[in-house]
Length: 476
Figure (cartoon, rainbow, N blue to C red):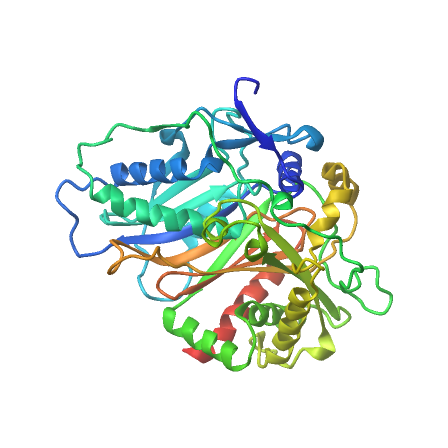
């Protein structure tokens, strides 16, 4: 890779993602968004492929990190980002056809997209190394629908966190509108994007956040606790084949749920965490009485960057905290449906734990972070290998990246964004189940589940999916 321009060393959090990718512990994350051109007809000379290529070129030029690839993933002390000199969009953008149109404005499943995402999350970035970027864009179209499509942005976790997917699509939506305003003869054959002479990437999180080590570790006891029997599914193992499934709630159902969360003085993240815990307790045998949940937290509000720069950055800027659920504290559920009847006591406990995390601030005013301990680990790949065969430290993880919002502009955007879905690979050493939440531009909330094949039984996940989805029937 000596012919590629060296950008900067990987930060500690980026090294973790690089090590996991190299070892096959984790492949990638993704954000999918459904786009529809405003108006019933397409403009004269409209060419969707040209428009998408033009928009992608604009976004890549705006975000230099998209030219970056990690080098020496297997040796963290020498790993760094290098810049590709150019990107061939013909190799990075893939067009696929739906067999059936996606029903607009309704809730339900998108099994075609789920199958594509499961395949994508089992495909790493090791092929054609040094030629292809560490991201790709999958365009899914319905037959005869030339003015709407679903775009799935799949990317290496060292390049960006979940919020970075929102940043990409926000920029992509703006770039699509700009591409539609240009002449159809312009840039028609341009599939290659050339990097600037000097590619700029933002510093790693440790250069933008002080990350003081916390004076104590208030996390709940792990699987070794003698007083509780904690469920963490099967032990950490390889190979890691990811499974993926999701469901989408209509804007009306989503809005009613959000309003009840507000009325109960809890967050959406807290409520979803409690729903998943309640459904798991209904599914699991009685001796299993404790569940640990990991909740990632964005560090962007505390980065030493201007507000707009932090908000619009593609990068890896997150921490995580933990909450513990115990069976006696979870309210009763409808055993016939597997759906919880009252999730709010558990949700309020989670909200309290999140407030405690945010309130546990260092002398400089930022919350203490769990990732600060990474500074003390020279080589995370050694830690990963040492975990094989050992119990997991969490049952599930809940990530909520919030609501997609368009860039400020006058009037309605030319390209409307509907459903938005956050998705990701399973992490071999991570929680048994990962729940990913995002709310689209149309107000619909999508909930996705990833798990490692062989770690969680399909029957357990089927019950969790059914129970979680069933809970929202009350808002119909």
